[in-house]
Length: 359
Image (cartoon, rainbow, N blue to C red; front, side, top):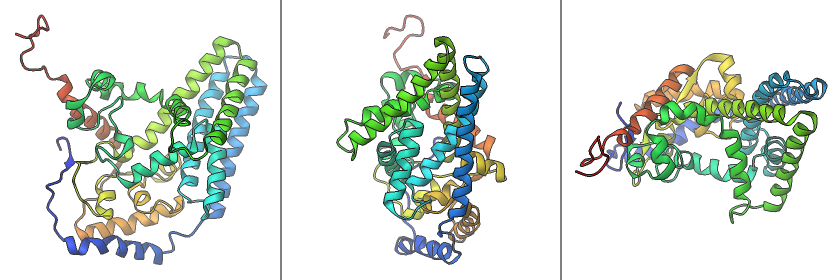
């Protein structure tokens, strides 16, 4: 479909019934016991990630100044990706029902281990959940570098206008910078009025970078340390992009002024990714994106059962429910990027292809 959007002129059918649609789904999910905490699951999962991190650090110290460290860098990129998924689950209170232990865990995993501000990310991610794929309200589709709709393409300026012309081809290379971008944005956000604990988070971030860069340049030669950073941060960024991009990219964008109830807003803008246990582990359960958006605090192991209930319920209501494979989801996302960038590749009227000057 061409440049899918949900506009303000969408028919408002079933308006009186819409308010109760999500309530009925929530009732079915609750009765199935899918919102109960799963402490054993998270103990095993987080324990495995902690052991992998400890093993990576031990291997780094044992190998010393060697090019074999690039293998360690690649392995730790995967571990960092899993840490990011752990921080995500903690932020949504999937692990602990109470706010304080969730915040403590989030600060330790995000700030100390990843070098990413928990407070900044929480603010950004909360706005995304409230208005997924909304052209103006979802920070994940803000046209900073990449444009996500034809409307954004027509209004693009600066880097977004230049990159947007070939953004489908540049998407993967740009993902290699995502890990560094998260750290840079976190440091930049410390001066924002919306940050609740700038001093605490600033201290934790400085501690992370001191250990990370200090350890690398203490053990490795400068050239090998820089190579380690490039491999580690580059693959970490690709991992994060591979987890988050398939979930919403290429799904309909919501235009300003469009009114949708909670159930339809979350379902119509999200895509589930099939693939079984391996995809579940790789994406940390976020391949069940529709259910995650509908029930953000639902523990990861319950999302599969919730998917069955939700898909059947959407079929009852006639709501489109999108599922696809992992590779197909990436193809759809890239096709969308190329499609919405088309206005930037078109020649402007009155411009000569030879001189580049107005006729």
